[in-house]
Length: 215
Image 1 (cartoon, rainbow, N blue to C red):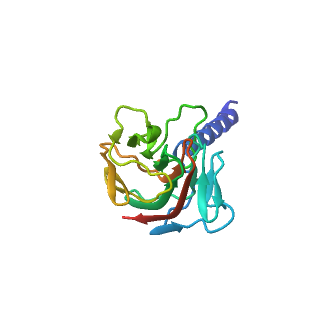
Image 2: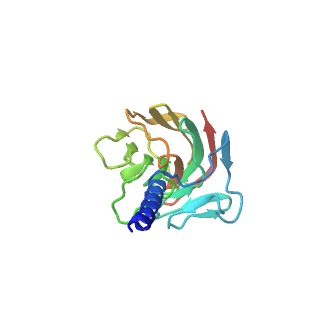
Image 3: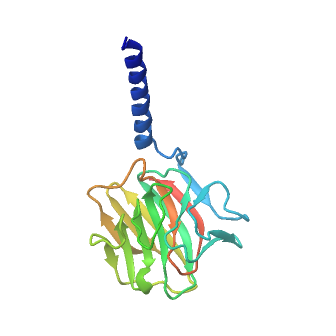
């Protein structure tokens, strides 16, 4: 008399197991970039290509504009290659600098409080009152972040930024001057670590001419 009950229970258990497996292993489903991607923001609104996690991201005169995002990034809805070159132009209107992006994140993470742990590598040019350039793995405040103190952000100057990830090494440049580099023994990659985002804390910053290339 237990046969039908056991059968139904087994089917339900298998279905639940499959569902939970799907939740834990399935990526966001965003399509992967094929070779290269270009974005010049030459339109009026962000469109479907971008995931705004809650800040005042907007397009102004053909540039991406942001201030006071407080770690609520703008994620590209495309999976980026593991080995990749990311180039873009950036201009801060503040002496505080604050040019910030995320590489190899999950495509949706954002700050829910003042404290924020990323899912990505965080690249900051002119952070902490324009006193530090930082490359961090997940936590920009952690002791294992890489810092440099040389180059500072000049307010109103448009910088050509370049970030490359080759194997375990990720490096960032501004106007062809190296800012920071990291050799990560456990490099971030795969589902949950395959998206790019513009980010910001407080200063008014403009971004333009994004170009992503597989290496």
